[in-house]
Length: 414
Ligand code: HAM
Image (cartoon, rainbow, N blue to C red):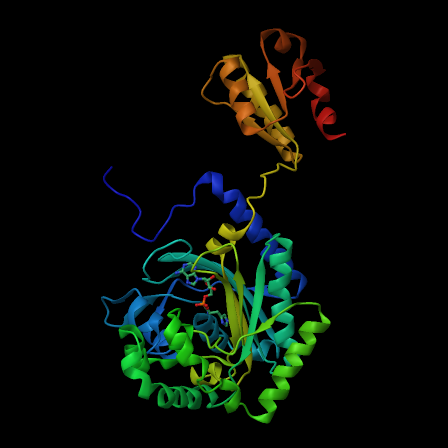
């Protein structure tokens, strides 16, 4: 076979798309219930948008982006995340003027050149939300509740919510310096990767899985030490609102997230059903990003959830066909028109009709109907045509009855 999918990318085949559609329908419906509107942005953007927002020293920008020089000069990148593009769009189209509280959601593909493994791909998909205009803790609680609601509706079990605050203003930067200062004397005890991170992005060392590094980190300064009093009050309020909504959470002061734009609340939903790549959703506040990218100062918060990981962690729901479906079997070449008209009438009335166009035998068509899980077959043969009738066969019970063609729609709809 000459061509195959590129490493880290996957086809989503017809027997999987039903689950994708179910998930997407839940996202559209619940985001709609919360008053969020969908936004769709291009899959590639100016490279500078990501280096400026996600951060030049982050893994994403320093080694995972698919970037190229455009024929007309500029540098372009396949989007590795969607917060920066949505902020760009918010500023470009003055969305803050249209509404002081902009609540947006999205579903789409992202690209990161990571080492592929279970739950980690080079092209993957997220759904997410971004809200612009409120700095208050009730906004934090609302989007966390939205994510929680979607996971509940999807029937995802064994997920937990981790919560932290990384403070406002220069907190993250000050903490980075404090951490660097604390870790430098231990430099020789750190792994090669962590030694590099110490120079570029020491916060990433907090995610370490190496036991002796974990021990060192145990005594590291806490980000809570850099909070202002307002940060503390804000975070306490987020926690009490979540408790009031019966949304359980665990505090995790190492949850600083791998992107530079965050301020105050950060959170992740993790699933016990996945291996190393256990985060199904991550998000947080980014109160400075709109201004940093050239807009008016606007507080904002959002999250994004990985669709592949969610589908992996979900119990494989039985694919139940909840609407009536029929297999229409026409055995007469001359009756193609009649069969198409019957199918059209049934389909226009919301009934799914499968139909063979390969002129296969009755047996082959019945076998296909069984494979599709269809419960009723409508059979049109020479005799039936003459009498303006069809045979309706119950494929579960194996019985069949004659129904007049004129009454077929009533038969299936009443
Ligand atoms: P993130 O933590 O980089 O955050 O990604 C969010 C989620 O996308 C992860 O929790 C994971 O489920 C999924 N994900 C990330 N990388 C991959 C991959 N290579 N393969 C499969 N799934 C992956 C963001 O992207 C932020 N923009 C979230 C955000 C929105 N923060 C504020 N607003």
